[in-house]
Length: 182
Image (cartoon, rainbow, N blue to C red; front, side):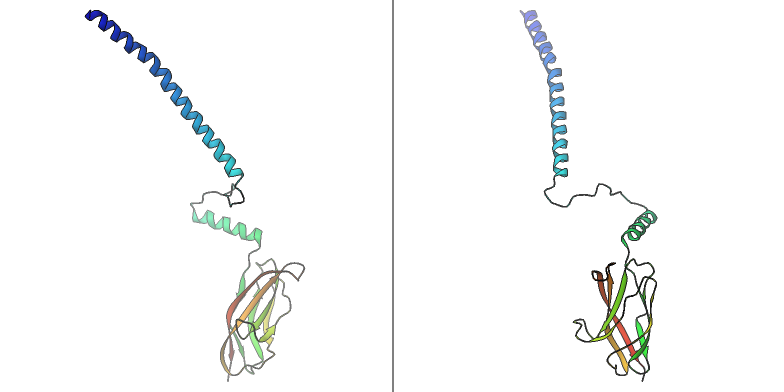
């Protein structure tokens, strides 16, 4: 009887072994199928993002600072970098005629004009230039209002315009100093 039990145990063990291998294979195939399905659905979601901002497919990982700077320089060259070039102080002996250095940098892509105002609300205009091409600038200007002797902070507004000279591309202002010598 003991031999019969041993044979039954051997048969049931070998019967289980026959089912374990196909069961493990089936689980692996099922898991791989789920992974493929998940990745496929993720790809569809990435393509149809519902108007949300997605990742740039042309983005690259940059680890070298020199390579990163080259990339930034190339982007700026292509996009038309806006550079401000000026000395922060204009001087005058009489309060109306000022010596200055204000240039539309040769690096710029757009024509520009400048305006000088007494405050950030632009309530009183002191000077408004004509258009300056990239690489050109002014070395003096004449104020419409006489400025009293002393040092005065004013607002210098740079306005860059598109080729039609009517559409503003970009505008920025900086604090600028007028120095009238007594």
